[in-house]
Image (cartoon, rainbow, N blue to C red; front, side, top):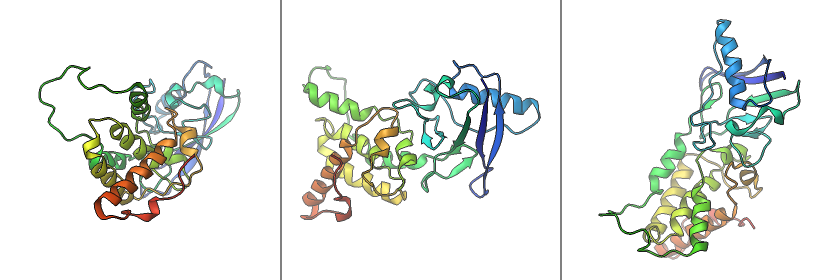
Length: 262
């Protein structure tokens, strides 16, 4: 198989950037998308040219670092997978593929297809944890948690923080990411004592990082590699409003009370 690749090249945040066309030849249909890019880079290096910078780590759909927008879709045309799990058999032989980085104010481009996603880490540091001393390890069954509650928490906790939801949203909103992080702790008894402080701190951190607002168009759910539901955004909104009422008798920020996803 062979492909024509239009790849975004940019030396840094201050560079203008442009799409550059490359040819990918002798591509096996069983190659992953990243393996195909490895082959392109190998030929560029042998030709004395600068290889394309792109992120990768586990290549098993766990770390979320393989952040590419492929033909306008974060992580590519398949649903429920990361870029490293996308195989070239998904594309027609001879196809033209456009590859770009995440596009968001909060994700400045470092080089080529690599963006700085540390804004997500700062949102987590604002409150995405349980700040209690655990002491000695207790028996796993000492605190009983219902099956439905545990499964809901696990669904939210499956978020790998890749940022695809931000890249897909026309407003570059991080609501699905923040909602997943808030929800997976808030629904469990261990996280409930800090739930009001947590949601307020994380939403305020999200706003400081200049992520956009939720447009309720569900692009985030459509591209999430872990298929996290937008219902967690509804849970986030309720948590945030309840935290505001508990503190001052009125919502902290009435703008957050937009229509909930259904």
